[in-house]
Length: 536
Image 1: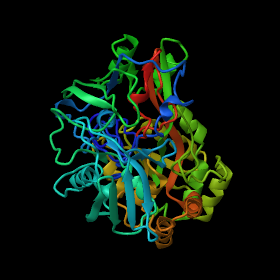
Image 2: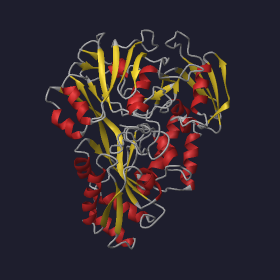
Image 3: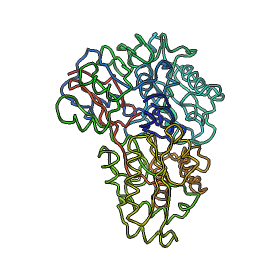
Image 4: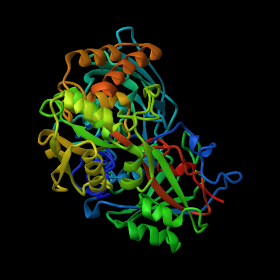
């Protein structure tokens, strides 16, 4: 990835999440069609469970792991609130902690917070901190938490988690005692823990502002050295609240080209290579030289239909397009088989996902019938695509051929890599789309409410907005899931997102590396979680 917010982060030609413009970002919770809060996944310690790769034997202590990531050049920083690239996020999670993070199912799991409890109205939340210390030996306190969040929310700065923390009234929130924070919210928010887990919402010491010379965090590794655009070296923090890492040292090596990352891994210069292509994975999987790790459900792949303009303002046309898609052909052709088919809903495998709906299959006869009823015989439509993300141009060509079998003429238009995400938010009628991992609630709030800032399908329905508000003010998780299920049934029947697949995020490791999580979508807690890794 190069430099963008980690939502659609990867190079502009591979953004994993929609919404960034330059290469390299991973956001998932906050901004453009994907900008946001890609969280790091898993519960504490889960990386060493049955989820761990090659879990051969008991963890051994020692060694330096060298991890190759695409970087951001001379402008790189260790300021965790500015983290945008995947490399930034991985370095930040090594040095710092958040109050919560996203588990593999994108539900919030406690980190520095030991508990959170709402009042009856869901507009005040009490967060209690676990006993943890910064690298300088000082305890992590409620004052550090409030300082960190107020710094992120500074209107004069562009910190990644700012949009995620917006529901909190930081002027009214206060430290009750050293390890208790009373958060006052601007409105009832049942899923307040998602804010604590937001991408970039790291806790730093009160007053901290210079992070590139001797950054002090509470994370599993301590700072040793940093050369922007080249390398960062960290050492094990023996006093980490979640247990000391197995590794003695961790080095992040910048390698912007995928070929450089895989060649360094094959040549023994690094032991971990981030973001490999499906072609590379196929070439090396099962050959014994290196291990290939596929993080499932990391990136939604689809087409966005604008529901406020012809021809997609007719829900019969949208349903016809759902039925035109041969999802397996799209996954096999556009993702080289490195993924699984979708069912026109975001968040497969995530908390609250409506997995009980029948899997949609291609039905060209029914599609033609619906188009005829809608008066859309001989329909011609332009599909906007770009080389901004892996598989986009291939998916467009495959869908064009599928649509022709239903009598629809699709013209594929190539857009600029630099402006694609912004262009497709407002212009055109049909576009290639993708998103990185985020809670389903974040997908609704950012993209599907009347006033959502990244509403790529122009889905604007007051009754849908009301259901979202009902879910947000529903304290019981089971009851809230039922509201989310109603919302998803509606989207499945007549929404504007044709979600045809979910792409794997691919890593490579040396054969001696153990403890790499296999079930952590990019940006969740256990993704790039080096405190749980060891050498066999």
